[in-house]
Image 1: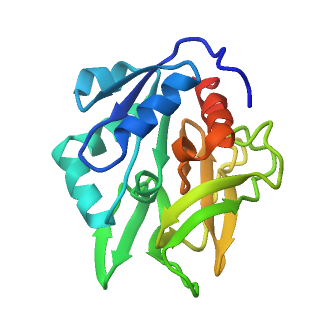
Image 2 (image 1 turned 180 degrees about the horizontal axis):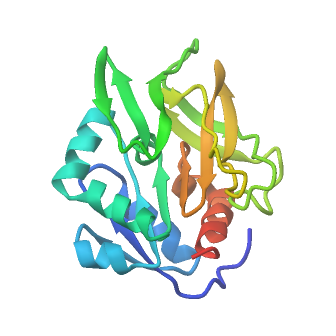
Length: 217
């Protein structure tokens, strides 16, 4: 793990009622960020980076996010090229829709795709697993291929079909993991990054990954 020498970037952990914000705060502070937990619009808009956590059901997270104007904050930041990172359900809500128990809920639609139940013998997928990083990934820089990260989820995006349509714009970098079947484990798309696993619970590997993100702010 890199030593926590990253310059003091201001990171807001969006507090919309769905996410282990204290664990995220501690992990970010450990790698040198100046962290604030808030749903304040101005603070979230003006921070160097915005982290969107998430636990629980897709529909409930979307309801909480909208109640806190988080959908507006994320959209406005991305429109201005300001960095946003989603974790776990905070990643899932960035997709077009989620389907849980037969109920379909609209997500933020930053990426096309549907969050669906994992098809595996054991669900939820809980514990440590490896990830196959995308070629040229900055998120996984300095991390070995066999590094394990901590997952807790029953739903995931199982297919990826998204191209920029513009040869001048880099296609998103998509990293994969497998539990019963392959699923999207992380995405890097301009100012928008996200992980299905929990960096804040992934020890030294997670600290390195968060350092990599903060160094881009």
